[in-house]
Amino acid sequence: MNGAPPDQLRIIRQRIDALDETVHRSLIERAGIIAELIRVKGTSAPGAAFRPDREADMMRRLVLRHESDLPLVTVEHIWREIISTFTAMQAPYGVATAPAADPLAMRDLVRFYFGFFVSVHACDSAADAIALVEGEGRDLALVPLETEGRWWRSLTAPDGPGVFARLPFIEEEGRPASLPAYVVGPPLKDAAPADVQLLATAARDGLHAAISSLGGRVIGEAEGETLFELQVSATLDDLARELGAPLGDVLAIGQFAQPIRVVVDRTPELSSATPDSVASASS
Ligand SMILES: O=C(O)C(=O)C[C@]1(C(=O)O)C=C[C@@H](O)C=C1
Image 1 (cartoon, helix red, strand yellow):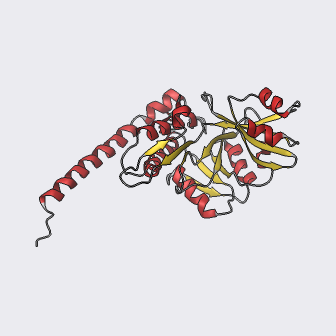
Image 2 (cartoon, rainbow, N blue to C red; image 1 turned 45 degrees about the horizontal axis):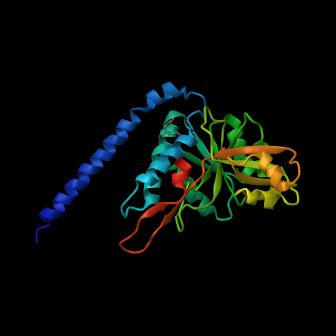
Image 3 (spheres, rainbow, N blue to C red; image 1 turned 90 degrees about the horizontal axis):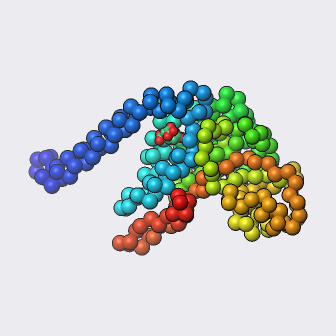
């Protein structure tokens, strides 16, 4: 036997090479658009490149388009590497991470979603990570939902940093890089309306029940304050009505696109991804 691959294998490899070349040339072409993007968006200010609403929309279309046995999570990761790199090419940024009970889970999450082109700084506390966002306004912070204490205290100014995404964005049972975390970033330019608002108000009897009866959920409680998520379609009047009492001050900590829940049918022959929430989320 000489080492030459049989014809069939050679032809398959030629097809792979041709496809790889198309993917690579497309990326080079995509990178050629950056200068124009910077000019049109006016991306000179730090943090001005982030467009989480646009990214969410791209991910919804990616999920709807996806087929084949190629794992969706692989495709998501490839696009996250692309988008994160293209964002940093417009305006360099780093990601500061707050501590997580499982540091490796945080490491996986940050690299899965922000790739390897951006610098990552592991902080000793959520407050330290958020302080880096407040500093020059060019960095992001990742704060696990499991974080204890009133970590959101400095995120209440309307023109200051806030939460603008919740990760993982594609929720699928058993997926890697699945540590639930918020992305805190600088104030956004011309952001489209989000799906979910992250709010804080004084803790009181009946509040948890009122939040869940409107489809929201409580994330944490600290120093007499409750942090919770509520769909933007539910108003604070709705919440006060459910509570049966006036609400008092409600602080806006951020808002973000609803992550996509995907249910994968793992029966052999029939392995297809069914986006559970994507249809309603993209309408
Ligand atoms: O659409 C934009 O505004 C871009 O900057 C492009 C891009 C991308 O690479 O696709 C990068 C960063 C944004 O957060 C969203 C999308």
